[in-house]
Structures are given as C-alpha cells and as structure tokens.
Length: 443
Image (cartoon, rainbow, N blue to C red):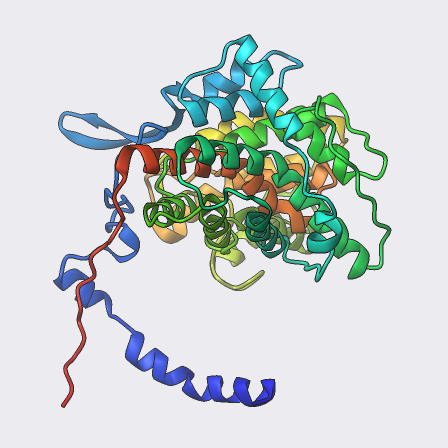
C-alpha cells in the first residue's frame, strides 16, 4: 500500500472514530468522573502522595478555600528562598538538583562532590554523536533526544537491572548529558537541514549546567556571567512542579510498571513535547511576534489594548481567543516562578538594550488581566505565568526556538528522576486507574 493510499484510507475512517469515540460531558457528570483528572474548579484528583514538592494556590479561612498568591516548595524549601539565597556568582541548578534527588540541601563538600560527579558524567559513548545524534537529524529536537535516550540503554550493560543505586547512577548520567543531547541535536539539524555550519563543543566538567549549555550552543563558546545566571535561575524554576503535571505523572505510571530508567524518561519526554504541556512559551513568542508586527506603536496603550481585545474575540493571531502566558491551571492569583523570574528578565533586558520589548511585555501584563476579566467574566484575577517571560529570555540569549522545549526537559529531568526514585522506594505498587465503561451492547 502506498502512503497516498494509506492516507486516503485513514481520512475515510476518521468520521467513524469521531462518531464512536466521542463521550459527552453529560456522561462524565452522571457518573461523577472528572475529565482530565480535574474537577470543575480545576483542582486535581488525588492520585498519590509525595515529599518532593508542593504548590500552594489556596489557603483556608474559616473553613473555606480562599485564593492566595502562589508558592512553590522543593523538599520543604520555598523556591523563592532557594533563588534569593544564592551568592552573586553562585549557580543553583546543581544545588537544587541534589536537594530534589536526595531530600536535603548539600553542604559545601557534598555540593562540590555532586557537581564534580555531574561534570565528569558529561560524556557520551564513543562515536554516539556521529552514529546516533547526527543520523536522521530532525527539527523536532525532543524526538531526537528521545531516540538518543532509548539508544543509550543499549550502551548500558545494567540498563534493566533493578536497585535504587543503579537508578541513581542512570538518572545522574542522564541529567548530566541532557544539555549535550539537546544542543548537539540542534546543531546536527541546523547543519544538515538548514545548510549552516556545524560545531560540536565538548562540555567543560568544571562549569555549571547553564554555563555549559551556552558554551556548547555558541560558535565562540562565549557568554556573560549575567546570561548564565539568568539561564540558571530559569532551569531552577522549571525543575519541578508539584508532581501533578502530565510528564511527571507519566514518569510515575511507567516507573510503577517496573520498566527501566531510559524507558521511563523517554515516556516523560513524549509527554512534555505535547503542545498542551511543554510548548507554552513557544506560543507566547509566536503571539508576541504577531503583536509586534501588527501594532505600530508599542507604547500606545489604546492600540495595544485594541489588538489584545481582538485577540480575545478570536479575530487575530491564531483565532483561538487566548492571550498566551496569562493565567495558570493550578495557581489562582499569581505564579511564584514568574514573580521570581521577572527581576532577572528586567536585568537581562537592560543589558541587552531590549527595554522597548520589556515595556511591551509590561504593558500586556497590565492590560491583559483587565480585558480577560471584562470579556470572560473572570474576576478572581488573572496573572502572567512563567512562560510569559521565559521565551523572551531565551530569545535575548540567542537560543533558537527549536530548543525551548528541550530546555524545559533539561530542567525537568531532575524532577522526573526524583519522582522515579520516590515511586520505586515509597510506592512499589503498579498504578492501575479505573475506567467506567459506557459502551452500548450490540446484538
């Protein structure tokens, strides 16, 4: 059968799937089942317990749940404190990774040892870059990385061996080489598909994760301390998020079946690359590019407001009636990551002479909640989430859009690894959710 014939057959059968697989909201209500494991107020159905992280978006007052400014906690530490207490020239990715993996903040000696282990683990098998990463390069770097992750299992003589120590070893190795898989995958694509020059820089074991990412990405290896610092904070803020997100839940479900680390992380990657999960900052950047091309005066409040209003009415941009980067499925009043990150964004914008762009972001942040409240009758308050600014930061750092979601993965693999370990140690039971059949019997 030719591809044309197969496409034709699939198109012919499409309506049958739509007719037979549609389940109405009425049935979900009738049986008390929460679509997407979320109730009508957006709260998640409890599916497990964790000591790794926590999100606060409501507080209890007089027996009632009241919206509050969001807070994010890693192993009992407020992420705001973790970022604020970093020294001026100190990077936090390694320290925070240690905390999430092992449950305690490292002392100076433990941090040096862990950073050294990560640095020495930034190596790929002989000829792996040539034989795997450069073979069949793809614009979809997440797919390229996932293929590499699964292939790495064949280079590991203990890939499927049980044991917490083996899992720790594998997770550390993957955390260490994720920046290499992402950057090398991009360079291969950029060379073979875009006909650009290719350069493969080896990581420096003495440098931090953020520094190595910029060093490997850029032709001249050069970066400023501020650039590395801002990227480091971005990685810290994306590292973990409460355990209830799709890719982390995927990690735990697959881990509970007893599979190996490479398969579990590859499954998480497949979840994260979904546009409903890991690609939010790309939509923000596409939206901002659209606004900049259609709004003549970025400082004209009325002109910006008018265009945002048309966006909410589904008249412009992608016509979906959304202002991307505004609001969050979990946080009610504010996203703590955005509030922490914004100060670093402003510093980088000043250093890059991007004040005009920064002012446009500030204006949209001010106007969008007002318009959303008017048009959607949402009066609890809508605030920007961390994705509103992260794409702007990556753009100022010269990071290509193809690497935005892979950067998310470079951070989030730490959280995935922590949850994989907790699932193995603390749960040790396969996750088997229940589904209510609403099938109609046929003669």
